[in-house]
Image (cartoon, rainbow, N blue to C red; front, side, top):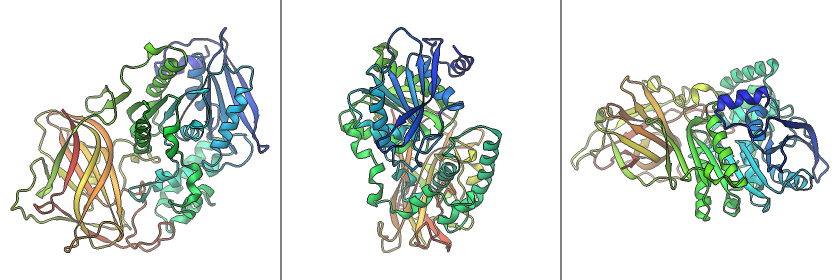
Length: 552
């Protein structure tokens, strides 16, 4: 067993290796039907029996940290791993095009693998994020040889995830597209020059997020256009141009067993749960793992790798005893424990926590005579409400769980807090903000968030959501009031006695979401910014509340 393998095994608390020897063949050439050649590395365990093959297709390179953490753990436990660089990345021929070639190239690679004398007839696929999308791209058409998929922090729809509630996920879009523009050809590397380039791009991105118009922000970040970023703006979300990279409508056709792995703070969480529901609607029984992670968090690697190995062993090596008893395994924050369920979401009771005057939050709704004044705040897109933690991909302070007290002290954030809880309360599932609002503008956003307030006073974000309103949405009543529902992404948290529940209402989380200029101009070209005066009601006629899924 290699020294790297020993270190990875110890750090990840992996089961013992099955073989101490793995032969690696570098730069295996795989011809595509159009004449382009893609390069791959083949990891072959030295055993006296045929080994199942795992195909990994990546746009981020094949070696270094990636090989040690994503490839070697499987190879040392009795799996051949064929890790291939996507078209136009890390030595493979052609040009990288966002999500466009993964179906054709992936299916051609599978057919090539089937013709190799080392192939045993058993095929699986593994990988996170874009590598997971590459699995979805071929899953419905790969044939009976494909016997398992481990889909980590990813989605079958690599188009619609770039917006949430109608608002563009600016940080995800601009950060990832400019990174790929600069580094796709070589693959992501950890050398000094690459690290310095990443730091420089990170600084430039903070300026680019605030630049207008947004369709020029890529040039601010990397001094040249990003084809991926420009493509997103060039084609509306409902354009048929995107049909070839949407595989969600075929999820139910996938017959291979599937393990879905997600994180409570991952940018793909809600999209991945939609994939889970599509599979369930088609009569499938996927497994589901959700941990307390954001996208790419180092702490997620051990649990996801152990879960993936156990799943593959059960499906490909007849080690059914290695697999867990229930298909859904969730990390319940607060309790800091893993819990298993038969399905997602677990059966829960909807409990309304009403917004009340003076920033109170209570399960007692306003009585029939309540005519309390609403709460007001002003949203200025020139000084946008910042993002603090959450389901984003970018700066560390905007990923995962963080103290929200500085954010909550801003005048453009409304805060409602419960009294200290007297008993335990467990919330697992999607959360909804049921709000009655008004705005001085026809075009505006509402952002809602659920937090836990610890006894120390620290306020930690659990889940949130955003909704963009236009004149074409729900029409206001005669008083200009709109009744809206903001879908917060799911969470799993066990509130303890002494802790408090807190909710926020604001109009943005920049740069995670593109700020709403208030003018109705297209996001790509808007340059004028208007201030919005916002109102949130909580009287008897307009009883705003947050709806929490509470387990018995």
